[in-house]
Image (cartoon, rainbow, N blue to C red; front, side):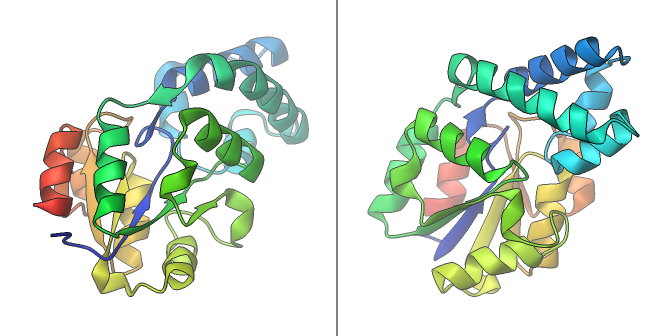
Length: 212
């Protein structure tokens, strides 16, 4: 029996094994613009809207940064992303139990839709919400509340599943249960500090929480 009527999943680092792609897009962008690059600094901005990333790393060059980053995304996405182990069977099991599911990502809509298509998971979700879908973004609860309303689900009946502190904070601010996953960019300490109700190391543990 499903524990929640509705679920919101983050995309990159949660469903999509795409962190290496993001890091490569980032390092290539910085190299092209002659900007310094550190992997740890880049990881801190995974999950945030691109306009925030560009403003932080390339003040005064934000538009060019976003354009170049997008070009590298188009080059690397089809070559470098795949579902995390166990994700496809998890989603299939949730669908069999009539759990409504949406994706909420800080990616631009085109990149989110394309990634979901490449991963082969579009059939499991009511809707994919890109960064343009709301005025405010994670960790603000606005996009999560919009996604819940679209599914007809109350926050207390739903869980937000993500790998970054902004995912956890967004879910908690919306009144949802928040579940941190251990295969993305966020450490267990960071996710728990953000307010995660649960922390899972693999999809088997997540399955037990959602359908146990």
